[in-house]
Length: 412
Image (tube, rainbow, N blue to C red; front, top):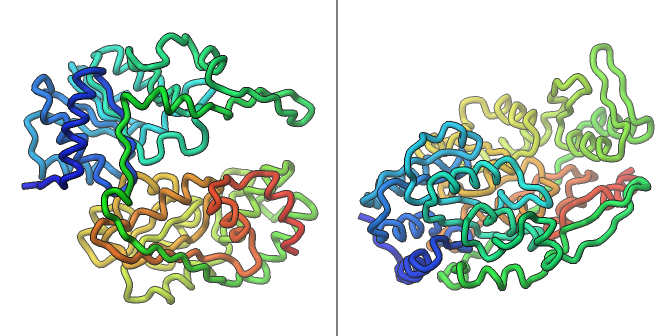
């Protein structure tokens, strides 16, 4: 039988009141504070709730299902990942839980995911519980499409994001390649102020977390041949082999190809990918021998390098990781949210994402209230681009093309 922490009990009681008044709530609770159980406990207290739909990321499904079984609430639950929304059974949903709700926040136009969620809400008019530890990680403007499908959301009078932006966004004009582009990222803080009546926020500090997170940067030299390939691509913007071509004919493609190569993989112009350097994978296997680690990778070919090196000692599913002494490899974006790697001794990054959101969310995967220390290892080439990316994202800034242009020539 699950026992809720005192703060969870308080949030559940507050949340029930908000749901009764407004029919939706936003749980802005930081990672590892128990958003999932809190949301389920809240809906269990709503007498009218019999069928609940829980939308989440694929990697989180097993964890949510496990929490549901432990809690054993009075309602039926269907858990499904966002990519499978089209498979949702057509029945009357009394409530819908939208996990990692910030993923619906694309603007100025709504994403397919946001449209799909809006359609479900329109069909059944359910109670809505939105959840995220970072509701607006990059811009306050991200809030609009998270809630626009909810009938009584505080911005319901605006027919579109563009009309919403008239009152809530400082729209700027940017010149990109001689074209004028309207930048809608300057959302005002008044957006979150407007959401306050519907929001419960809770931090790890308030929950009593006292984790000492230490980050270690370790340098691993890539092969000389890999370094020469990067230099040649930087100068010529194309490398032709007997069967494949590496093309970097735009600054964006050059940034991506260089990023891949420094971790030992490359995606050719044909679409095929290849591992050309196992230096990082071999280093990680040797350094963390005898330890249970969570490995975050960026590009798909990096998973091949990890599997080739670790063999059957690495898995990609959370159930297999928790039930064995094996390691787990997760793609950064798909693994940064909704899962717990509490069983890991260390987190190890094979590569690093350009997104500041990825940095802050993924590094917290081991955190629990009981854990007092977490060690995170970043494996970078000794002269590579990864450390420059790290310097940007650790300061809550995405690594952009302008960053890349300033740093690429300094690497040689």
